[in-house]
Structure formats: C-alpha cells, structure tokens
Amino acid sequence: MLEHIISIMIFVPIAAGLGMLFLPLGRDASRVLGLAVSVIVVLLGLKLFLSFDGSTGAFEFVEQAPLAESLGISYRLGVDGISLLVLMAAALLFPMVYLLFKTRPRGYYCNLLIVQGAMIGAVCATDLVLFYIFWEVMLLPVFFMIGLYGGPKRIGATVKITIYTIAGSLLMLASIIYLGITYHAQAGEWSFDIARLSSLSLGGGVATLAFFGFMVAFAIKIPLFPFHTWLPDAYTEAPTATTFVLSAIMAKIGVYGVVRFVVPVFEENLARYALILACSGVIGMMYCGIAALAQKDFKRMLAFSSASHMGIIALGIFCMNIQALTGTLYQIVAHATSTGVIFLLLGIIEERMETRSIDDFGGVAYKAPVFAAFFAVAMLASVGLPGTSGFIGEFLIILGAVKFNPAIGVLAGTTLIIGVCYMLWLFQRVFFEKTNERTETFRDLSPIETLTILPIVVLIIAMGIFPQPFIDKIQPAARQQIVSVTPAVPAADEAVAENTLLIQARN
Image (cartoon, rainbow, N blue to C red; front, side):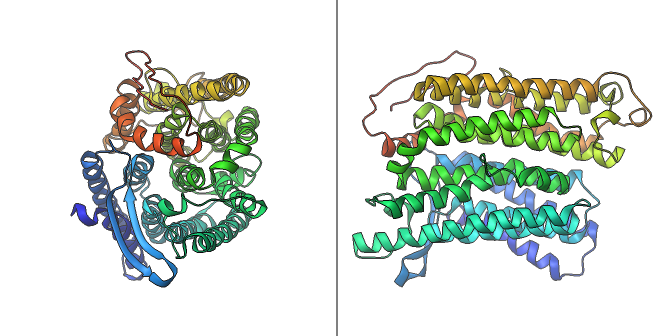
C-alpha cells in the first residue's frame, strides 16, 4: 500500500465526493460516508508519517508516470520534510467537520471531500503542471461552498475571492510556461519537474516578472499584505466549516508554494526582494492585528487574526535562514491546529446561539467549562504561550528574523503583542463577565464533540512540549532549500532550552 499511498489519499476523497453528487444519498448518509473516507485518509496519513524517515531531506513515497511525455509533463508525487506537516494537517483536520457539523446539505459534504483530495495533491505534486492542476481543482469546491451555502452577502464575497484567485492563477500559469520554455532552451528537453527547474540559470526582466507571477498567486492565497482584502468578507460570509478549511489548510498551501517552488528556482530574485517581502509580512501582521481590535463580529475578528498570524508565517520564508524556515514549517501546523479549533468552536457557538456579535456573549465558561478550556488552549497557542505549539514556531521565526535583520525581528516580535491583546480581550468578554439571556442556556460540549476536539488539543500541547520529533523530520529538507539561496553561510550548531527545542542546524 505504501507504494501508492499518496495517490490513494488524493483520489479516494475526490472519487467519493464526485460519486456522492450522483448517488441518491440523503444528508446523513452523505455525512457518514464523508466521515468514513476522511478517517481512511487520516489512517493512511498516520501510516505515512510514522514510516517517513526524512534524515536525507529527499522525497519519499515517490510515484511517477508520464502524462504528456513530449512536453515533459508527468504525474510525479512525493513527500519530504517541507510537505509532510502540511499533508498531515490536510489529513487530520477534516474528520472534525463531519463530526461537529451534522446539518449541512449533501452537496456541501461532497465538496469537502473533493477539496481535501485536491489539497493533498497540491502538497505532494513535484511537477509544476500537476501542482497547478490540483491548485485549480481545490479552488472550485470553495467557490461552491461559499456561493451556495454562505451568509447573506455570500455572492459579493464569492465574486471577490474568485476574481482574486483567477487573476493569481493566470499569472502563475504564465510563469510556469516561462520556466518550461526556459528549461527547454537551456537543457534541450522539456520538463516541469521542480528538481530539474531548480538548476535553471535565470536572469533579466522576464525572470523577475515570472518571480512576481508566482509570488502574487501565492500572496493572494496566504494572504500577504496588500493582497488580503478578499479575506474578511470571504471568511465572514463562508460557512464556518469552509472558513476553517480556508484558514487552517488552504492558506498554508500558499506558504508551502513559496517554499517549494519559489525558493529553489528564483533564489536570486528572492534574495533581491527579501527585505521588501519581509516588510510586507510585518505590515500585514500590524494592519490585520489592529483591524482585529476594532471588530465586533466574533468571526470577522478571527478572520483578521488569522491574516495577522499568516504574516509572521510568511516572514519566516523571506528571512532566508534555517531557523526561520524551520519555524515557518512548524508554525504551519501549529497555526492550522490552533486556528482550526477556534473556528470550529466558533461554529458551535454560532449554531447554538444564532449570533456572532461579541456584545451578545458573556459567562460562557460558567455554563460550558470544557468548551472554555479547549478554547483557552487553542487561544493561548495562537498567541504563542510557552508550552504550546505556537511558541515553538514563533520563537524560531523571530530568532531567524533577528538574524536576518534586527529591526525586522524586533518589530515582528513587538507586533505579536497586538494579538495577545485582542485574543485575551475576546476570551475575557465571551467566557467571563456576566451571563445573559443568550448564554444562560448555553450547553457544554457533548461527549462526541469533546472526543473530536480533544486529540487536536493534545497535539497542540505535545508539539509545544516535545517539538524535536517534528523538527527532526522537517529540518533536513528545510536546510536543503536554504542552501540554494545562501550557499556560503557558515556551519553552526544552535541549542535552545531543554523543554522548548533542540536545534542542531548546519547552515
């Protein structure tokens, strides 16, 4: 099974989702089938994770078959330390949606399966054309989930996100074609394999335009300032489970795309514009953090909060050192789990109380202590409390940012305080103070809901206390990416406190 484990994880959800569209299944049967398929993907993902070595930094579980041999387009899949944790996030988090949200229409569950398979395909594709195909496929279900099942202003939000993503995708497609033509001119053959494209010698204005073509496409998906303006409306109007998919997983694929395809191919352009891009990440952190402080809508505040945290994740890429890049890859999962739990708990509140106005809440902790405890763990991880997964990733990114540019590092570290302010204020306002008519009857999580969220809460704490097993799997691949950008950086061994992490990095 390991020989084709990635293909199974990709196409079983897609085939099941397409099949459900044509089968005469009811809502409950569709949800149960979707849950069963997502659990299969989780089990396969855990098998892959435990079998993954990662010590060499090379791709493992490689699958390859020609698609258009004359053009060098192949069905080429693989997993390395860079894609591993993103893949695991896409596998582990989806069953929670089926278990917690039981009243969605059949078509919604179908689209969830399709988007999961496409996300896994995008993360594991090592051929640029194949990546682009999965990239486009994963956007289509999101279009339907917002446009058909979103809030009262869903049409405007759907149009905005569609225009943004199509524009970015077309720019990326033009850049992919440019890379293929350039490789053919330099090597005498066609190929879109990222390993071969990384050997290209690129220069001149057209290469710079291709670099920005990729960057704009990925910046829209992250989203990176100033390409974030679609996010508040889309996150707010989308069903909460869709917002969860967008924030916890899809945004991370934008970051992954930069690390996988931009860093090794456009190393000169990345080094040239790294400071500007790093400043964009910090500005996004500040702007979205301040915007979150002004929100009265629970979901809209969390939307801006997610965008702010994506700024620091993107910052780690542009610092171009092993600490920051390792922190980015670690923070991808840390943010996916913490933000995912927060959005799912928000969905439960919204369904039970039929409101998202922060002013309508108060005293939830007195009525639902388990609910409040889970939210507290996810919230504290989101703000980077030591002992949680969020601290490890943010610490490494800030460490790398200070090495890259002290001013950028200090400013990024200071900006994190904004997130602490609005998240603590939100928690105090929603879970404490006095109960009211709406919260007086609020009930705690059911046993099934508790058991659904508990493993992710445990993972948040485990990654905060025992980070090294995860770092060991991602660091060799991260080191290889950095070598292509900074080949002359001297070797170094870094050690950090016993209960946080042990970094043994050779730059």
